[in-house]
Length: 493
Image (tube, rainbow, N blue to C red):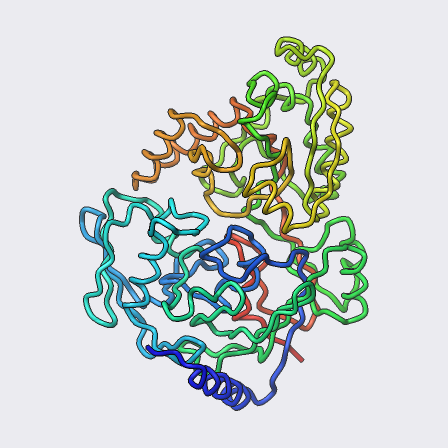
């Protein structure tokens, strides 16, 4: 699988020729997205903005997640699971090539997971895959994976962006020039402006309808609105809810309102005083008026949550009354914690409308109990570095859109800074349980612990509110996993 520059050039030329020949009427779509990805390798970064561009478009996994959250065949056409649940044998699709024209086979699968599990791995969610004890190449189209314990959601985890298959020759450069096996190939990235993808002609699966897709980075709601109305972009997957009224009765557009896995939280640095004090966190929880935040920040589209779980999930339990809005209770708890006059803190806000609007409302609510909040607006790359990576923050607001990401609370090094051995043991038990009734009971117990510990301020579940040209079809209304999947998008007459 020698990848030379000559081979790459030939593959790109072949891609363009076949893409043009495969579609009698080549078409393109221009999509506005709020955040620019910090890089384009989903196996080496946690930002949802990466998956929005590349997931199921440039890169694919052994399986893929569909719009309903189901697991479907991907680069693996089928699989078998041993009776003890510890051995998975995958049969791979035949005739698959990477975008540089080289062949995909079992060696690439082994390389991908060896890389994820390596000591120097930078995979954002290596913990999903640490149960893997071995990846064995049986033959070029067969791979066997062995686990050290049963993992109830193993196949779903294989469908995440963190587990897409990469090749050893191109993996190190995927952050800036991604090469995958998906229906779209990377063309160029104009930093601060756009990423351009083109249909990959030799794609192994069903041909796509679009010849080209351009992602334009537009963080400002007014600018996004004007771009839509002027026809400079054809749609956006998650438009600011405060401006939806402009499009709701306009026949030139369709508004798609669906669900996401985005639990919007007031993230708290639990390792940093005074937030390491349970009574302080409880006081903050009592100070929050969720409905006022939802009305002001999402214009009523959000759904209140009391723990980090999506209300549409079968495991969800309503814990919103754990610490009901109560200003006097909040003041009393602060006094008990040694802060009768409150305290000062900073709230770092990424460039997302819901985050910055929520921040303003929460600062006002906290002021009523004596907590003085300084709002600090940061760009996305700075948020990733300061807050997520370096944990240099007091409070922040962000939607966590990864499905079933309650396990992050079992990682004391995660940026929440929450370290509870009992909770960690509970999540370990949950991860090793396959019986659905038992899994649900454990998930409810886990949610209840986090709610009572007031680890974060649980605000609302983010709705997906897409605005699209009325002639476009095939967009996902719901978002059960991070990504903006292009494969079914098409223009109609």
